[in-house]
Amino acid sequence: MFDLIDKCVNNHPKQYVNHNSLNTPSHPSIFSQLFLQINPPSGTIRRGMPTLIEDNQPPNSVTSLRPHHALCALFFEGKGYSQAFLESMTAFLAQPNQLVQLTTGCDTLCQACPHNRDEICDDEAKVSLFDQRVLFLSREAFHSEQAKSLSELCQRACVAILQQGLLAEVCGECEWAALCQEKWQQGDFNRQLLPSNSADSHSF
Image (tube, rainbow, N blue to C red; front, side, top):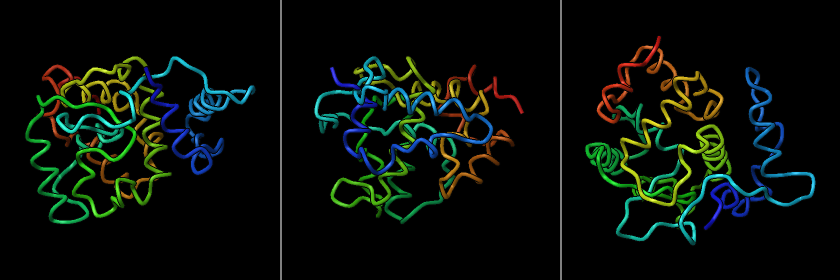
């Protein structure tokens, strides 16, 4: 069994594990706790965080998803990096019941993205940090090696992050952050990706 946080850190140990970058003005302690989990005083990684399947990448037969993309899916509105990416994303989101496996590397959505450079995002440091934050805040919700439906992962991200008012803390550095935050405040998100009870529980 592999530790998903370990995978993030071990893949890019120097690039993005930064105490200051893990803190945010409104929740300065939340990501300080994450930093201590992945950088304890002994210099070793603390076990017990969410897990991932062996070798960091799902089998080819299983659709894969980076943790923070469960949030991206909820706010996608036909904008993106290329026509191929837009078509791929639209087709992906049209199947909310498909089974997906969490990964910390490039996932199914990344395959049509022009930022994918030989299976490594050209902004890997930043997007890996987004993944860390989602995993930390979701806790047991993302703790599984078993594939889950896209709808279930989006629901869990919604409950653990969006409904707690933590969207900006997770991915406020993203170029799409202002758009997503505005859409959330307006209740304008892809409700078809959530069970009806989760979509209806949105508070403004």
